[in-house]
Image (cartoon, rainbow, N blue to C red; front, side, top):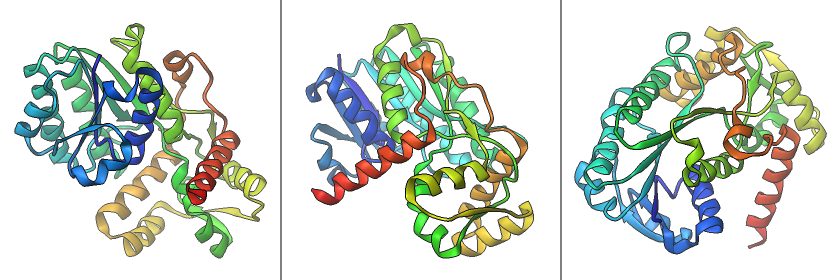
Length: 289
């Protein structure tokens, strides 16, 4: 069985590739990437695949049994056709199964909604593709908050517009494990899974970070419009709007969903403290190499 992973050199893609290598051997895992030179660290066969190029995927998916489609990072209106390039090329090559990494969220509520809406359209395209399919809806990664700890410490706070809203965080490690199971086990075919952990508030997140990283952070809630203005000033209009939309979604409860992680993997999702400790371990190992 040959399994291809798109965007394989990204952090989520790499995590999925590593889990698949453990289970089926590196000779059976193909990485599809936009720039071949950036994927040499994967230690597997890599093929060129730019989401904008149907021709790339017509070649990249030859001889593939299952494909994992990682959601693209382009503007929402471009993503739908980009994903269709992969879906259509998979069909043309006789790929039997497609697994798609979608996201938890609401199609109408926030400035993040256009991205959610484009993901829902791809979910529909996947379901109607004629292939066997599984869809995962990823929760928000916990890693960006952990990567941002130095800034939080400098500012003495976690500051956003989520208020008392709860968020079921996940991690790239947990998702890598989940998607490898979803790809390899037929019992998941035809299912859509919320891949999230236990939902927590931003105040709880600050307390857990303090516990694990020995910090003294507090959580400060600010109005949505003020937070959006701050994010745009720091990150530019597009990313600033997206980030504000994500935290507004948490405030509105769209990230407090029931978890299907155990159905997808056979084990409970790791709690936030365990994910934080895994993050420290991975970071320490990388520094020691």
